[in-house]
Amino acid sequence: MNDNSLLGFALLGLIHQQPMSGYDLRKIFASTAWGTFSDSPGAIYPALGRLEARGLARATVLESSSLRRRRVFSIAPEGLAAFKEWLMQPVTYDDVIRRISDLMVRFAFMDETVGVERTEEFLGEFATQMAAYIPTLQQFLRAHASKMTPSSRLALECGIQEYEMRLRWARSCIALYEQKRRNQA
Amino acid sequence: MNDNSLLGFALLGLIHQQPMSGYDLRKIFASTAWGTFSDSPGAIYPALGRLEARGLARATVLESSSLRRRRVFSIAPEGLAAFKEWLMQPVTYDDVIRRISDLMVRFAFMDETVGVERTEEFLGEFATQMAAYIPTLQQFLRAHASKMTPSSRLALECGIQEYEMRLRWARSCIALYEQKRRNQA
DNA sequence: GTTGCCATGTAAACTGTTACATGATTTC
DNA sequence: GAAATCATGTAACAGTTTACATGGCAAC
Image 1: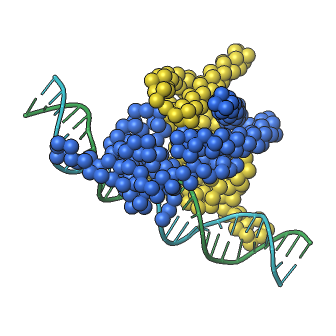
Image 2: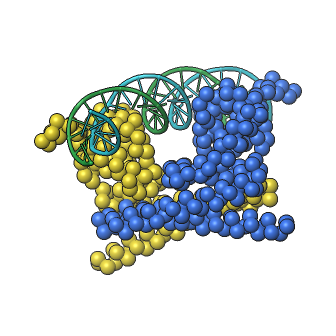
Image 3: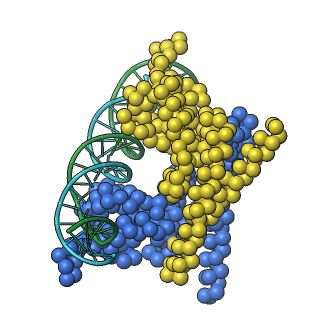
């Protein structure tokens, strides 16, 4: 009864959009913008097996006019509940430091699964934690720049720029959702 | 005789700068911009043990006027060789898609360990692979934007902006190193 | 009739996480 | 003398990687 890994949640999110086989999921990871995930069968099939064992996903074997078996996975009610719970978690300071990719995957599935309201909330939390973390990095850079080698300083600057970019991105998303809301009202 | 993990290489790089104990390394991960690494003892002590077992690092016990033992790790010649080999690896397309953080850690240690020349080469390879990958993401976005939910589209846009930022960063680094070289000549 | 792709999986080895454990030293 | 911090580790477990394995189908 353990928590799912990021891969497990990504699989849940994808089969929630549309039931799929392990092979379909592998193709998605191999050929789309989800390419940061590994498409290795040794990762995906065991992960699907765990989802099934935990009652979060269900497999149905299709026999469509051929002997070749295909197991199509779909999300179970318990799986949807666990997935929503994952999406609803507040954004912590630790998340932005060590689990940025988790946050982005959560965001990608968010508005279709838990609604626009929670998505806007999430962006606010994300921006808050980001805005809190960036100054600590800048302070560290100021304090240590003179003792650092050029490449390590440049690497840190790249990291800071990445966080700054994500903060700008989050704020522009917030503005966009707000604008949408006003247009609807 | 397996390869080291990213954590293993990071530890090698840090004890190459200056011999340190496991606790020192934990403090670095807990309190500096290296915070993306876990400072858990269950990660660091076994990783140091592996480095030692593979002959890449050496521990010497200090008894400085107290009974409290402190094992200070320093890099072994074989460790330095392995570390340099890691830094010298060419940047692949797969690296930019799935191992960006590895690349940034490599870069951070690069100029002090394998010299400015290799660092400039590395930046060129990095920019090339980045410039090759970005258009595929943009094409994917154009092709699928209409079918995507707002948040998944925005998440993808964030990813693209991240890669664009890194490409700009790499190019500005290249310009900076070139300028330095000209000033010296 | 053989090459290559479709589709599924397993096994071993390794790494990292979480939680626990221990004892010494400093600070109040 | 109690609490916090220094400093080191271990154990159980889960997840990933790499490599291997299998058999059906399609094309040439």
